[in-house]
Length: 337
Image 1 (cartoon, rainbow, N blue to C red):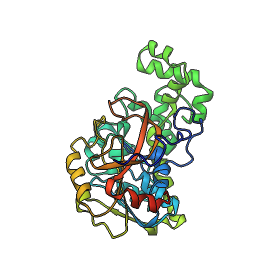
Image 2 (tube, helix red, strand yellow):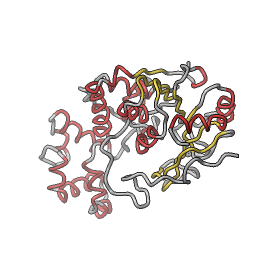
Image 3 (cartoon, helix red, strand yellow):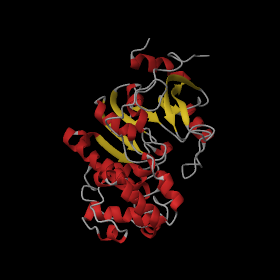
Image 4 (cartoon, rainbow, N blue to C red):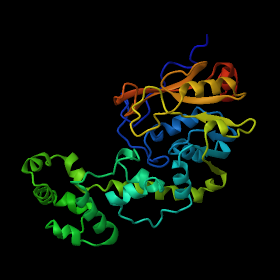
């Protein structure tokens, strides 16, 4: 029986709520907004993948690892594959499709478009769950007023709230008490006003989550300037149907076992995946919390989790595994003897 190749847990990842980690935020947000994204550990994952000609991100999801791989320079060809359409959103963003995106998507628009437009389903859904609209019915009119003020320069909806300003974050922060008063009066609940004295509720008033998601997509266009776009290929197929070139590095991030999968890939067949791992003639590096059958842990690190086993948040230990029969190959490719 093989043992883990390294000490049980690598040093905590900085800036992600890990014990002893710093408070700095990541300078890059990897991939597109996506439930279960590897954004927080994308660099760590790519650092533990062998270099080579081609990287296959087999369950690319929101393409966080694909994004980090493009920036790493370790591979000349990177394939982002997923049975879902999030990689297409990533590809479209890299090609600049959302550079001039300004739409306000209402609740009705969301339910009409979410099954055909990945931008709408991911960026306008609560927690990127692709099922529920981003805003509650109570807060939607307020967010729409902010959107029209900031995106279109139209402050007429804000004036209906009794506010004569541009609705910018700076103005809301400067005149926070006035905004809290108007906001709570509009909700028709003075108890709400008492709750709005802390910064968290002020953030709720001034934030436009949709614009934060859009800015993240628009920033992906910068990959064109790095020449990374020529390295990138997108596929949308079942992992078992993907054509794997010889000597390709294959990374698999399937839905985790015992994970809160509300609005996520709950129907994934883990037994079938493990059977596939046992049959394929090539090494696969797998992300999971628990070792798939016939696999051995090769790296681990603590991270902050909101989708961990037991459906609770908090600190989790992210792990990488390879099939037991490829352990020595992995060690050689990584230069770890």
